[in-house]
Length: 260
Image 1 (cartoon, rainbow, N blue to C red):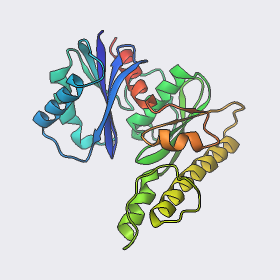
Image 2 (image 1 turned 45 degrees about the vertical axis):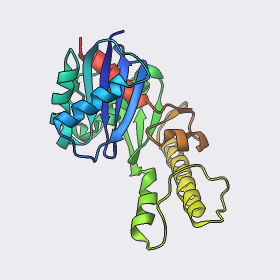
Image 3 (image 1 turned 90 degrees about the vertical axis):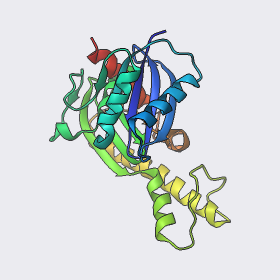
Image 4 (image 1 turned 180 degrees about the vertical axis):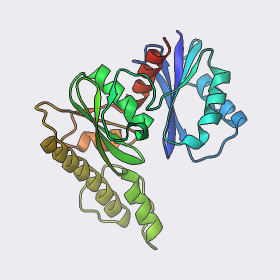
């Protein structure tokens, strides 16, 4: 089956996805560090290894799609994808001709991730939606049923608290984020895990409720996506659905629309 290779380039991680040409089906996905500097040759070897060792045997890769919030490496990644895919390599930006509207004061500054989240929400859900993207930053994208991005909220990411505590204190260790067994920790690591986890859950609930109060919409769907969505999303009372791969789907849908 012919497919497309998409890349969601974030500040911390880059997520590659192998999707059906329609963009609606994620066949495989991989997460690698964005911060590690790589030459074109290293990128090419990495992607070939991921594709060859992946959980599915892909057919020809007809299209490449990039959505990036880290401009420094975009040119290298475009050149690498052009040697792997058999068709065009498309980069999604605020200038892309997509069936959505960016209704904010500075539309050209809106990140590619928020653009494709808007597109995916319009196609997938068709109703007023708050997409809570739990990544390096936590973003709240307000998207109408017609695919209008109204703006939103950008807050520190879930890992920011873990990083700050580890880097700014002499004795507190770096811990992995996970739902704590109980709120009251009995070891330092458990206390940190509980504090960061419940702070993140509470912050999402509070901001979603404030958005609901401000947005004149009766039925708002709240969808959690991003790297931390599987950890945080199920514990947030205001979240209706957890869709960790929504941004990849949006990139795939954008590729299908732009490559016509």
